[in-house]
Structure formats: C-alpha cells, structure tokens
Image (cartoon, each protein chain N blue to C red):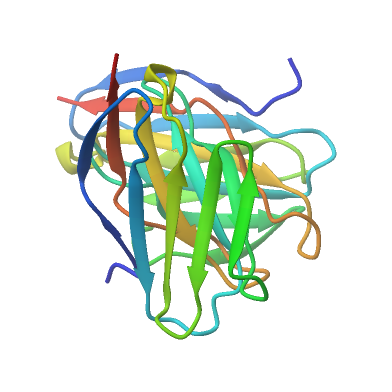
Length: 111
Length: 115
C-alpha cells in the first residue's frame, strides 16, 4: 500500500516557470516530510524537508507548502532552470522509522 | 570521498544464482538502510540497522533476502536464488540517529539484472 501518493507523474515547464509537485499522505503519525532529487545514475539527495509545526519552508528557489489538516504537502520550484531537470520524490516518516517515498515526478525544464 | 559507497555498481546474473551487495556508510552514521528502486518508481524500504542491530524489515524482504551489519560499520545484502523480479537498483543509505536531521544520505546504488 502506497503510504505517500505523488502527482503528477511527469511535468514539463519552460525555463523560468514554477513547477508544482503534490503529495498526500494518510498516516497522521508522520512528522517528517522531505523532498529528494534524483539525477539519472545517481542516488536520491535531500533537497528540502519540513516538519508539521510550520506551514511553509523556503530554501533558495525551493519551497515546501504543508497543509496538516488536508494531509498534503507540495514542492514549488521558483525560476526553474534546465539544470533542475530530474526526478523528484516526496517522502514521509515518523521519527525513528524509515522513509516512505512517493512514486516520483519526472521534471523536464526546457530552455 | 566520504559519502556512502556501494559495490558492485552493476551485477548481471542468471536466475537461480546468489548475489551479494556491499555498502559502506558515512563513518559517523550509525543508521544504515537498504532500499530497492525499480524503473519509474520511488525507493521502497527493505530494512534498516542501528549499529549492528536490524531493527525493521519490510514485507518486501522475502526469505531469499538477508542483510547483515556485523560490526556496525559496513553492511551486506544477499539475495539467494535470484529471480527475474529481483532486477532493480538496490540503494543503501545512512543517517545519524533519530533526533537529528533525519536526512538519509544515499549511495549511487547497485544495479542488479537477473537474466
């Protein structure tokens, strides 16, 4: 059973656009929500993470929006660049336990 | 290089053979995780260790799979009697204990192809 549902499966935006990737979860015990970025042939790498005591977190061009009541969170990439083209995974866990990943979103940023 | 290293990076084997993958975590991390990733999917949790203790195993980890971390440092993942459905990327990750950042640091993976 997929504990974290991610959409869309793929996304194409032009350079400078703002891709948005959405995730939803059911387990209210989850208290850690990271986003990982993966390039072909590489392992996933942490991009940004949020805990449920805040509704938004920004790091550079990346922003997580978190809606605890709706059990949803999303990643926004501001001023997207071709170098942002990668697969993005949302994930969730409760402290002390392993991360549960979404199925991923393949992002292509065109020049 | 002080990241997570995995060996071998690629393994091609025939159905029914046994394979073993090795993971060397970041030295100050005491948690080590194994994940499996198939094409177009997110990483799926298999098992994790805190030091040498295996604390959690996924239902995905059938009896043909065994993982060890004998001295709390490197870990091995063995798959016995491989099946074509075992073809995947096997990812290892390490982290600090609970209560710190929660970030998992992944290796580049070991890709298994079962013919």
